[in-house]
Image 1 (cartoon, each protein chain N blue to C red):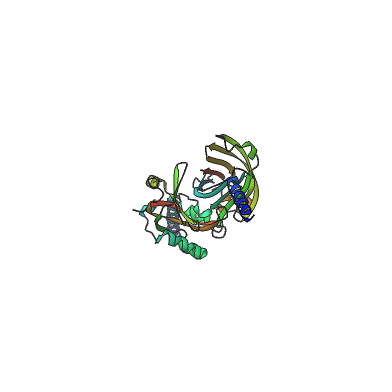
Image 2 (image 1 turned 90 degrees about the horizontal axis):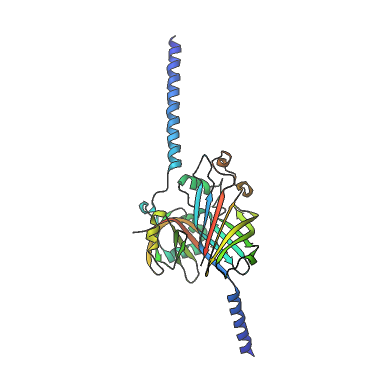
Length: 182
Length: 153
């Protein structure tokens, strides 16, 4: 009897393990572009973003270390992380937690390019807001690549630097997120 | 008449001084905002560490380690556990296989070619700017990230 229970438990755990379709990467990238017509400096890349996607439930998540955004100019990098901007000592990461709301339209077992609708909570500078966006999901064998583009209104997240008012930083920077899950 | 002449001389001196200061200020601002990060390979490292000891130091006290190492140029010596290629870039990781805590290195564009020659299991020395350590809820593990990296020769 005990052996049967143990066997059932083992089969059950194995089934659960294989049923979970969570893929992760630690090399997703985020491009942040807040350039304006009078200043082309405020743009940066973060190449070490942590991301996950559950191909069964459609759950997606991102974690981005603010200090990992790399600008070309040291002064802009310093301002970006400073107290008047992202205040990265106090708010070290920006995160997103949500899901692909039309996950049934994305066939993760068939190679192809799919249009996904994504909704979730975006947390920047300690402020969480619901966001919706679209994403492109490319399935190629076991590899899944997701790309999304959206804008963020800095003021919504309590980021109101003087440079924004001066027109040197875009009020709604463009964000591009790309994650390759293998 | 003499008083007027004296006033004019002083006025010109003040104007000239102001102009010189304005130009100097403009040059300084121009320099600051056109400056670019130097190639990390030319920067001296503030610390040289062993990867696993470095991870342990962060695990023992993340706050203290972040204060000590963040935004510093550090050389890390260790064994590569994973390489992750994405689009045109590549990242190298050194992971503690017991705790899953890891260090990840993102390279400067001019050093990508060197980074791509390495594979899992290689021992390597990498120099870069430490962005600090955080705990990932997604991975349930600690991570320490580096940017602007180069292979240390």
